Image (tube, rainbow, N blue to C red):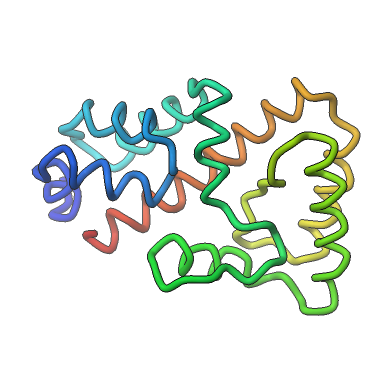
Length: 166
């Protein structure tokens, strides 16, 4: 077990939950994952986190989505989440911001929530293409896709959280 995972396991519940909320802003997620400590490996923690995200109620998913900026908007703030969002969306080129803003508007009108995509490693064009394809999903399919994207983002952020020893 890494020293940073050991530190995470040893944190008081409220501190562990606060760190987890920076990875996925659902209180149900943070409570579930914190309550299952200690984790014997990072892989076990990541697997538990993925399962917890995929089992969230839709209201809990919406709570998590409320912490995510729109794709293409520059996340404000100096906190961990804003910093991670800026890094994750670094592939968005300035000339695509208007197209993404319009895509976000159409998506939000159709589905009633922010467009979420695991942006790490994607170009702005790829994010926009995914958005356009997902507009063809029905509501049930899109909810499944959103859960998968949220799980992928949470996995990356949780890995960073443990790496950074936060």
